[in-house]
Length: 251
Length: 222
Image (cartoon, rainbow over all chains, first blue to last red):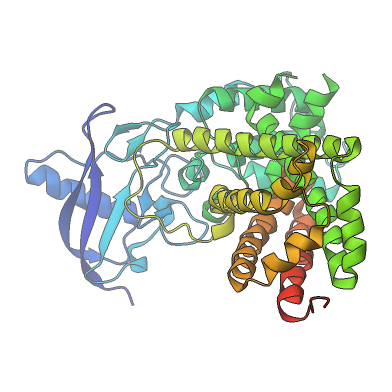
């Protein structure tokens, strides 16, 4: 049964990109366990505004786990302690009476803090712009089976395409590496005929952009895969390595 | 070829290839050590054969290059990764599901390196190096050094601890190296990770047998 709980939240407050940040502890009374985590922050913000303080800035949009804009490092986990969901899908029933919940922004050189819990993830857009697309218009959806694609390829491409680009992989990685994101984007196109043609060029240019933007070197720890809300597999990283090395060796 | 240095995957490729090369060396070295268990005379023949001859020196140089590349790139990658991580650390981090080994390859590597330094001073310096510079007290029979070394329980323990660090390093290193060159998929993932444990265990067991055998079972000829 969901009950109302009294909690404390320890939130990272940072006035701007250059300012020094710090933690602030707020008390919240009678939070329904049926409410979502972001609703809890909405309630906190209302409380802050009513008290004449500045509300906590955080990213949110669709609130159904598909847009990839919500972030937050909650109690030491990207997207919170629940498995395979985004922060907006996290509910307060994962927490208990009297808990102190630590809420931090993504911390990585590639994702500088804009304010409080909001980080700048433009770097991911820049990487996509470097090659994460098909250059020509491939037309509308073709008739089923007019373009035969092996089942396992279709499945793997769809699994990779589930990546919403939230950046949890970078946030979880001790190396601040964006390899899981880039590998998912390279894979979803490389496994399908429309994207295959440019696969090698794409791998080269996206990796070059990723390196240029200061993301770290992957050391295959697998932390990204564990924290990914969409269960993207690190075997995509092996595929990216293969595409990239293959392209470079042919040059 | 500048991509080997300028791109992250290129740098990982070098780590991977140099690591796999060092694993080959480990297997080669381990097989020679195992000869001691069967016959000290045969072992002494091998160590004499690998003295200051041109082929042994060439092999040593290539090997040293492999170690240097692997260590330099490890340092470079670790520094770059710390920079990419940024200055602000998480107040709380629970991403414990990634194995401890995989997150501490540099620390484990350093442990192995410290052991390597000790090992070189104790054995290589007295054997190949002294022979090379023509020192009169160079030793060509390996057993003259190895047997007293492993009759000392402290060195046996130090060596075994170093082998444990090596085991941890290899359990992540082996599959990770293959992953970095792109040889992996959903089916092979589990197989490669398990194979890593098998390879690491075989190599380390092969090394560990020698000090244990000498300390407990080997009788000095009277």
